[in-house]
Length: 310
Image (cartoon, rainbow, N blue to C red; front, side):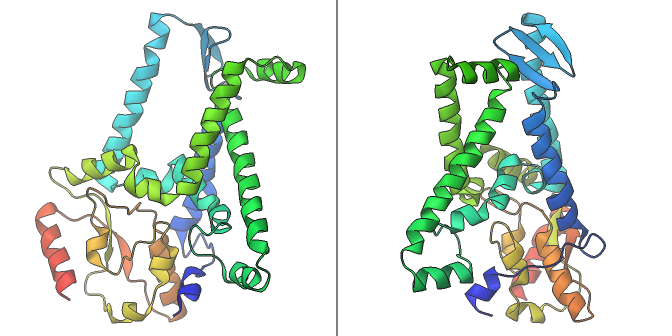
């Protein structure tokens, strides 16, 4: 299988045969993105610095010590929840909920337009035949990236200023310079993270590192891992790249050492490799070879050593 065909691998989003990818990509990820962006607009949560009040579930509370203390408490509460999830299920937060990972998956065409990642075959063919199209694609990529980051930065800005205040000042041309600066800074950060893609997740994300550490230091159980089914014949995997092609971070699940959860590890436990393997094997009237499994730490090293030896 060529590199171009390998990277172009896709499979149907069937909720019966391939539930992981469908539920993650069509339900869970959009739900959390909508919740993140629309919380201040829907008055679920907002720190209104203009009117000096915190809004929670439609109720306004004036800024004071008793009110503001809930902000760090809520933040650390979320961190503890993520740590608990990571201890049991590995970096499940990354693959299923993380807004940056979701945005990275949705904006992959923006990066491929400028050559970050494997370009689609059609784009390669057009740019080879019409070299000036490369500049056009770069321009489209920048325009789309600026539009997306401007929209997201504006919605994030509503966490701190009321929507009607922002719109009225925009129309009157009296928006304070500090607001423009803050929005511009958020756009720069957004552009960096959008074009960095999963390289940021693998190399620089503090949440990813903390999740890997939490999972690695789990006292009794290793976190949930994607493994070969016990006793499965792995010989067909040597000529198939479906699981690696479907992986958002380009991990090769056929190599057991790549599936371990630890420092610098990138598996998000999203389940897309499971779906891809199931799809390929179903067409052959066979069962998929990958599945989620939790292994006791004592048996973990033995299983990995056996798989590597095989």
